[in-house]
Image 1 (cartoon, rainbow, N blue to C red):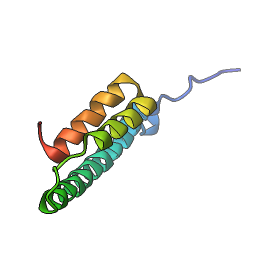
Image 2: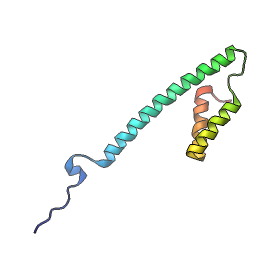
Image 3: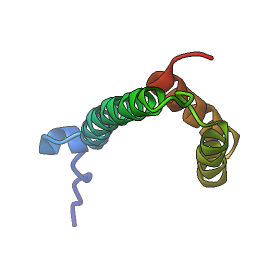
Image 4: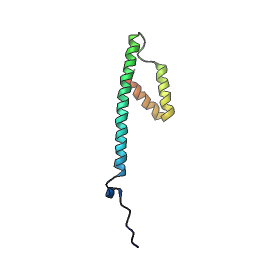
Length: 92
């Protein structure tokens, strides 16, 4: 009885790493789109707050956002949340 070695993914024409990287690329595209959308919304909020005579940002709101990111993703989540806040309102 002769057994052939199992075909390698390359022999089948699909590389699982390439397929997974394609999935990551698709996720990245969605993340970029969502960040751009978030920035635009955040800038609108800042403009409305300023037009109404208020401050363009709310520190208590920012703390809630950072807490949510930290709770979901750990310390790196807080850093990600801070990056998103800076994108929307600029540096303080």
